[in-house]
Amino acid sequence: MHFSFSQGHSTESRTTRGFTLIELLVVTSIVSLLIGLLLPALSRARDSARLAGCLSNLHQVMLATSIYGDENNDAMPTMRPYGVAAYSSYNHGGRYSVNEAYSKTKHFVRYPFDRPLNSYVHPNLPLGGTPSHTERDQGKMERGLSQADFLDKDRYNFPIFECPADNDFNYQMDWRADKVSHVTSAYNAVGTSYMFNIVWLQYVTSEYRDFVRPLLWHEGTRLFKRARLAYPSEFIAYYDDPAYFAIAKRRDIPLYHHKEGQFTLAFLDGHAESSSLDLDEPYSGPLFLFVEQRK
Image 1 (tube, one colour):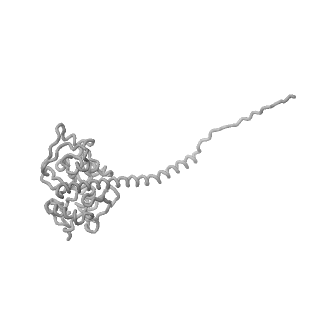
Image 2 (spheres, helix red, strand yellow):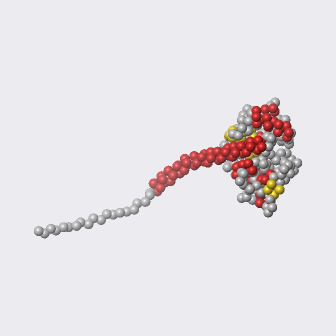
Image 3 (cartoon, one colour):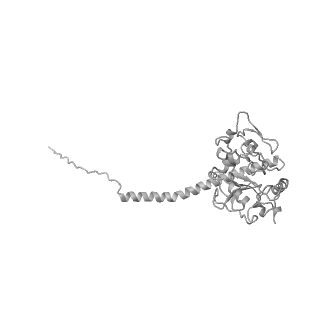
């Protein structure tokens, strides 16, 4: 038997089809929409992370302050500058100023080894010298070091004293003027993003005298000790650089490190929070003056 098979051949036409212009525009629009939706959320997440880091720093600084006070007869961790000016609100801890800020802040800032909280907050970091035995004198720098070593941004850093959002302005380099300096951050200008609450002591600004009598150092120290015992959860010990300017000058400010109208604060009991301040009613919100100074 003879079988005959016939095989048919079919050809399929395959063509590669690309996006049309309309389809490409639709895809681009969708991607742009998604980016527009995601960016604000990412920005808020970034800001929240920076705020959390700042509050964590303040909490650690406040714990170090409490330990320092316990070991030093309730003394405040502040040092006088080299000259005859007032007690410094920013020499409690942190780095030396950087090159960009040195000419403006050299008469006030202390070296890391002369800042009393550095060894408490960063016990394993080198300080570059031995602190002075008296608060008015300068400590002894280690052999082989020079001032240039401390002016270098990459050396002798103390990150606990740097707010994650403190990166582009400060109120300290031109503190006599009602303006912001954009030369560098507060951390790089004076060594810390956080100011200690001593504006109520001698040599306070004239604006601050509008609603509080100035206190000499010994009286301020006495009231500070009492505040630690009587109302530690109310009395502000530290605040960020923008808050310091607002309180000392008693006026609104153009820039904040975090949310507009909010400052980061640390209290004598060790807790830290983000809060607003009513400069015209200093007792309506967080207490940054002593109870004994109420009118």
